[in-house]
Length: 75
Image 1 (cartoon, one colour):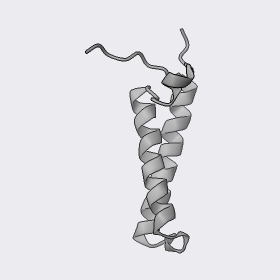
Image 2 (cartoon, helix red, strand yellow; image 1 turned 30 degrees about the horizontal axis):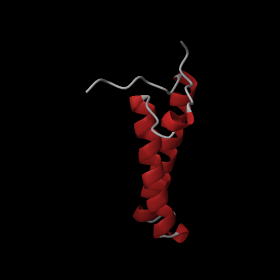
Image 3 (cartoon, helix red, strand yellow; image 1 turned 90 degrees about the vertical axis):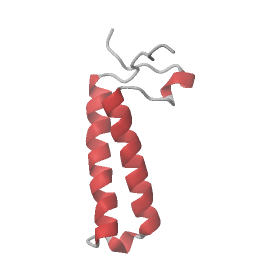
């Protein structure tokens, strides 16, 4: 099986990593207590969304971009 070409460019990658970190912190804060008033569902959504954003930023591959034909890489 061949490797998939990256489809997430530099700016896109930076934004995804930053948003992923922020969402991860928010999600952790919900479960740790400081933002517990937001509720566990919001915390879980923040953690999952943060992990997805961080993962797509680090791997430079977005599975949603593929079927939509989006490629933000500078070529």
